[in-house]
Length: 135
Length: 93
Image (cartoon, rainbow over all chains, first blue to last red; front, side):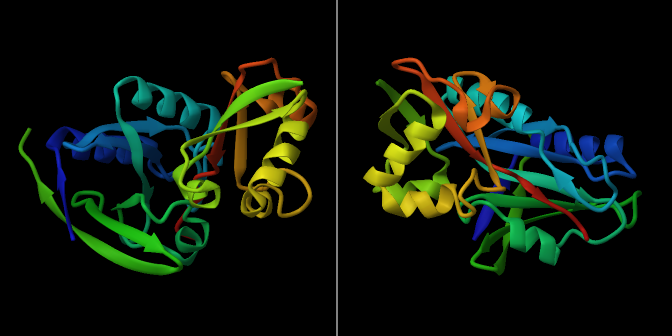
C-alpha cells in the first residue's frame, strides 16, 4: 500500500505541527480520485501536549469546503510533540474511520520531524508507504 | 411533520445500506433520529449508545451545531439538512 503525498500538503501539515508546538496539532485531509488535494490545519480544542480533539465546527466547515470542490475528507493528521510518529493506544481506540488515512507527525527531534501514514482498522495498525511528490 | 436529509459520515454508511444521504421525518432532531432508528436499526446503536447522542458524534442542522441550539430538541424545518460527524480525537497519551 502506498500514497502519493504532494509537497504542499506535507508542508502544510509540518508547519501546523511546528506552529502548535508544544501542543498537539491536528487537521483533516481532503482528496479525490486524482489524489490528495488539501490539508486543513484545524484547532485542537484540548490545547494539550498529549491529546487532541478537532474543533467540530471547523470539521464541519472543512467538510463543506471539500464538498464544494468535489472532494471528500479522506484522512486526519496530528502531531506527537514529544514522541514518535506512530499511533498511540489512544489514537487506535478513538480512530473514527477505517477508510481514513492517519498521518502522524513526530517531533521528538524537532530539527528532523517524522511524517508517517497509517490505516487503523479494528485496532490493527497498517503503515502506508509515502511517495513524496515535488509539486 | 418535516422531512429532512441526513448526511452520514463514511463510517456510518455501512449501517444504512451504503447510502451517503438518507431521509427521515420529525419536527425535532430527536424525532428525526428516532425515525432514523426505525428505518435503520443498525444506526440506532451507533448514534445513541447511551440513550443520548453518542459521545463521539457531532450533529449540525443546516450550518448550526446543535450543541449551541437545543440539542436533540432543536426544531427542524422541512427540507433541512442534518450532518452527522464523528468526533475526531486521539493523542500521544
